[in-house]
Length: 254
Image 1 (cartoon, rainbow, N blue to C red):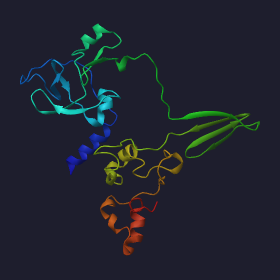
Image 2: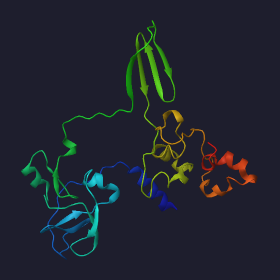
Image 3: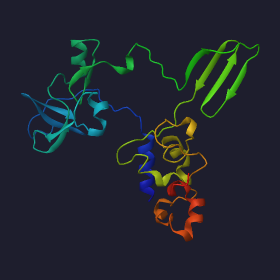
């Protein structure tokens, strides 16, 4: 049980951590053992090189938005997944020498690419949107605040600031929010699950939901940690009142 808790915390806390794909690799030979770690000796045309093995779930991050992680075998006949189709580089030094704007050798595709950490173009992401429209002229400023937005009216201007949508941050895969729902009411993981899985755990309100699916009141959630295991009691008349009070989310009383 303790080990499963450690795995859960590790999986959720590492969400969003970039996959390391820069660095150097090497050529290899059949049975030579040159490839270490998660690299595989792959045949790329007439070349043999140590390539990082890709995963279908992370192929866009590892190999690029249009790449495909293909199942196959390495040079030694073992099962291996790869998105590399040709050997374009083995080291960062090769890439930098060929084109200073593409100094990184992607170890999944063995192609040169730009260094995202030194990009000079600025990108700004905000959680709010501001719109201005005309309204009836007034002499004083009026501010109205709801769960989803703040509206300020002054003179002939109206400014509406809308909050970010309430959505799960872990979607898809064996450890997504849906599969971790039993931890929503576990006191050890309340803060973690509220941050990573607010929609699944019932912390969203209709006004700041993403607009898809049915909204769930922030006060409508399970009071017990094992409601999922007791779901079969939801429709049993003798337990309906108890389940409605303690397992409202699981039983669909929200």
